[in-house]
Image (cartoon, rainbow, N blue to C red; front, side):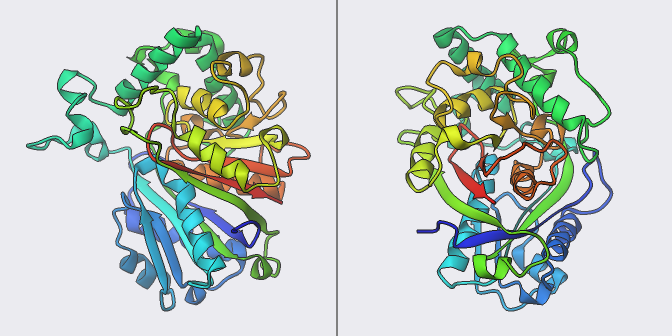
Amino acid sequence: MIKDRTAIAGIGETNFGKLLAISEERLACEAILAALDDAGIVAGEVDGLCSYTMETTDATEVARNIGAGDITFFSQVAYGGGAGCATVAHGAMAVATGQANVVVAWRSRKRSARSARIWASGTESLMATGRWSRPWGLLRPADEIAMLARRYMHEYGATRESLAEVALALRAHANRNPHATMHSRPLTREEYMSARWVSEPLCLFDCCLESDGALAAVIVSSERARDCRRPPVYIHAIAQAMPRQIFSMTNYYAEDPLLTPSFVCGRQLWRDADFAPGDVKVAQIYDAFSPLILFALEGFGFCKRGEAAEFVSNGRLRWDGAGPAVNTAGGSLSEAYVHGFNMITEGVRQMRGTSTAQVEDADCCLVASAECVPSGALLLRR
């Protein structure tokens, strides 16, 4: 079992922005070197690399440019936003089984250029995941998640007020975080309700930012982590999930499209953990679109099916609310969108006690990757 045998010893990130001048390769290297410095580990000790299949920089380029040693383990995880937690999980398994000693996981992305967006490129034939959606107008991820959000509203009576609670909580957290893109831009309920539609029922503030930037984490054994520069954050439990009959984003083939990957991921995660959902005071949940947080709160067992809309009311998700506090750095909606890796780094900060929206007495932190695609989760602890 992986429980507490490994730890995140260092984290690093670049500035976030739009149309940054430097390359994705340089962003990746800067984030990795910052994470190694945070841990107090020299680059020559790195012998493991974990990243996303969507990473544009070849792992050999990263290894050579950071000055890594001989690499004895390397992996990539697919499915975009579903990959983040699994990159750390793969690194943890490599360290725990002796395949590597110092693993770096990272995500580097330049999303703000229009040419980098999925719907901006054309191909002669559609991949399987697009054959039943794009010809009929579901061109963007926002359109696909909007369909599931409308289904959720129909099934359970949820309204835009529930989505507003998510967006407002995350913006309030970003307003406390000087590194967040939306740090100086408060959001009111009136502004949310009057915002332009992106894909009904999703408005502008239900959709993630388009960001450039990179983030990284260093994974070592628990014994090694205790001698590093920062307090260790233990990887207590890991999980991945690809539910039966899943169809990325839209879940068309599933008998119940609202049984998202978090229901399988949560079952796996809590099975191997010493904690239960009721013990979790802070969570970092992938939020490319606000409804994904509602789905995940139910899937990971914070509330029953159909109850998330009511569960999030009255500021519950805020750092000083009834909890769990969610995406305390601002998340993809208000900090930056780098395929969810900032959920991992903020989870580490919460466990270190250094978050700008620190949750008191939080002994563990759930980190969840994207709903609606094959996904993963981590449970971090002090």
